[in-house]
Structure formats: structure tokens, C-alpha cells
Image (cartoon, rainbow, N blue to C red; front, side, top):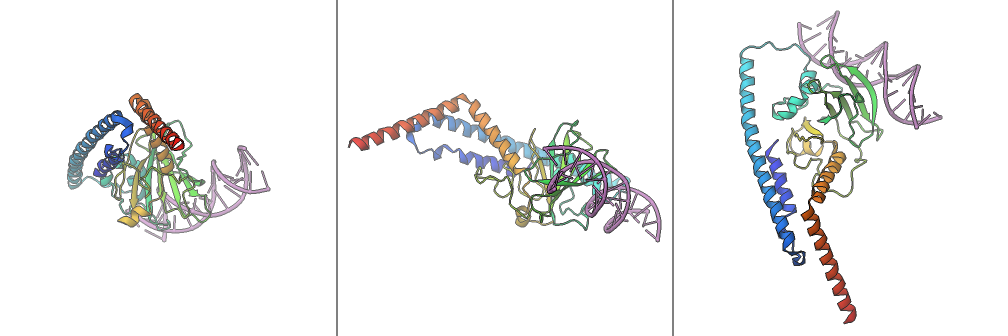
Length: 295
DNA sequence: CGCTTTTGACCTGCGC
DNA sequence: GCGCAGGTCAAAAGCG
């Protein structure tokens, strides 16, 4: 959750700005509908801002509490650095991504690891599904599976097999806190184009960013079905964003398009307005054509 | 037959 | 230096 979500919402508002509608023949009905939707979007934007403020205050309280507990001399767990901050705390981190201390990926990275881009995706799945498969559009080859100490669920290791030279790896493990969530950690950057990346886009998300997601090193987005992305980089700034692998983007775009299409098609007023606009347009076109032929 | 998955063994880093 | 634990390798098995 971040202010950029609100920004994205604003951007979406711009896309359906009634001012863009220059065609007078679409009628006032469409204008009214667009105005109504704009107002609705405005309300949602305000709600997002409000939620963001609440989130910030809660985060501040959490940081204070963590500070106090560490000052109280609570025993530190003698653990290898890798695990705690990843799979075990994946859900918490996604809820509080700024408290996740792996901004450089160094808290769990090992020297043998390739690349410096680390992203994390949480996907909701059925707990009875033990396949540990996270569909993200790429082709993966499993090369190992291991049961880790902190998590009874086995961790699966995958390499990108779409291109022989692609260095990207991913680790998939069910979250210890929430068996409904499977956490996938991606390492490295794909050395090939996204095999499923459509040429036609929605006009956003071209830079591997999720629409409505926040910009920055620790992006998180969550919804009931969509993947939850928590991207961490050892680099910072625009390069880091640029090098972010395209995690679940095709799936996410598909989901987004589907949701938008559903919500729009369910709105009878909207479909009626569109139909009216199209028929008016066709009529206009036919009339002008017949006018030209007769004259 | 070729590709993928499984799985035990081995390698390597980290903490003590 | 030793032991632990995560990560990787590679042979065997499975599958279409």
C-alpha cells in the first residue's frame, strides 16, 4: 500500500475523462455515465489516501513496538540469516513491506546466487494443492526440492528453461503462516523477452509494474486472486525497477482485463450507452456516405 | 526418445 | 575446525 496506488487510480481516471469525449453524437447519456464514474473514481482515490494515512500511522506504531521489544533485550534467535525474513515472514512482510529489511536482498542472498534482482510473489492457492506451481507465463524446470528447517512444506527450486542462457531462478514454498499462500522468490533477470507478453498493452505496466502498485524497491499489491508482489532489489533507483523481472504480469493483466470487462459488461447502463454511441456513429457514417454518393 | 521430475548425495556458507 | 542448513548436481524414474 502506497500513495502511488492513489496515483494510478488518478491515472485511470484520466483514461476515462469525459473531456476526452469529443463526439457530441454519443449524447449526454454517456457524459452523465462518465461523470458518474469519474466521481466514483474520485471517491475511491480519497479512500485510498485515507487508507494510506492509516497504514502509515499503524506502521509507525509497529516500528515503535519493534524498537521497544529490541530494547527490552529479547533473545535473538541464532538462525541463519536466510529464512526468517523470507518464507516464514512472507505474509507479514507483504503486509508491512517497508519493515522488510531485505531491501538489498543481502539478508538471505548467498554468494553463489546470480544476478542481483530479487522479487517475491505470493499467490493464493488451495492448501491441499501440494504441486508448488506458480504460473507466471515463463517456462521453468525444477532442479531440486528441499525441506527447510523453519517450514514443514518443501521448497522447490526452479530454473528458467525458456532460454538455455537465462540465469533466472525461482524458489517456491508454501508460507508457514498461511497455508493458502505460496511464496515464490525470483532471482536474476530474464535474458529473453517475455514469452507471453502481449504486444497490445493496457497502456500502463510496460515497465514491469503492476497497475495500481507502488513504485519503489518494495512493491506490494494484493487482492483476493492476484499475485502479491514484493520486489526487492540490491540496486536502487530506476535501474532496479528496470531490471525487475516480469512476475506474473501476463496473468495479472489477464485478470485485470477480465475484471474490468466483467464490471463494465455487468453495468447495463454502460453497455446501453456504448451500444447507443456505436449505433449513432454507424448511422452517422452511413448517412455521410450516402450523402457523398448522392452528391 | 526426449524432456521433466524426483531424490539422495554433495558442495558451500555461516555461526559457534 | 566442526556441524548445520540451504543450494545444487546428477542419475534414475516417469511421462507423453
